[in-house]
Length: 252
Image (cartoon, rainbow, N blue to C red):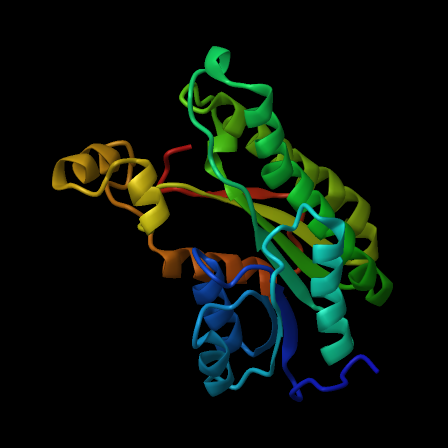
């Protein structure tokens, strides 16, 4: 039953959102590393590309809002119905709200709670039970290294990202006795259009000012991040759980 509809010898990975950011390159890297895939909202042409890399692919559409319990459950159901198991699962959620604390609103707080806390909560609630039942699995929640330090320009965002990290670390303690690893990875200073626009780094002067904040003196690439994520997802590092790692060039 566990191996129905899977390519012999391939693991099964779930990537919740493959329409943007780290999702598409992470799916590609997992396919190259021998995974069949369950993917949410794939960008055009991605399924065909993954299949050309040898992966069998199951897709779910309209699953971007992981804060809704039925969305995460539908993703997991898609994987279980197609493959009979999910070996690894990852999700990234949320958006930034900037501004001093005293200028923030309750609406800002609730918006951030939904994306930064509710979404990873619901995702882990959905993916962990079948992994625990099998006695193995890897879960990676992609957050932000903004939760790893005080950030007066975005205090609510920083605080709730920190909360998500500690949620992951606590969940990892519950899952560890069952052979399931749960970790968090926080990004920042990524060479990605969303980051470039949010930080006004779309001019030479703006880019230079942004890069000057990074100890490594450059922005990180999406492909670098995908490779790091795979170390937590591909089953090769079986003795690490409850950890947070920052992918931000030394900023945090």
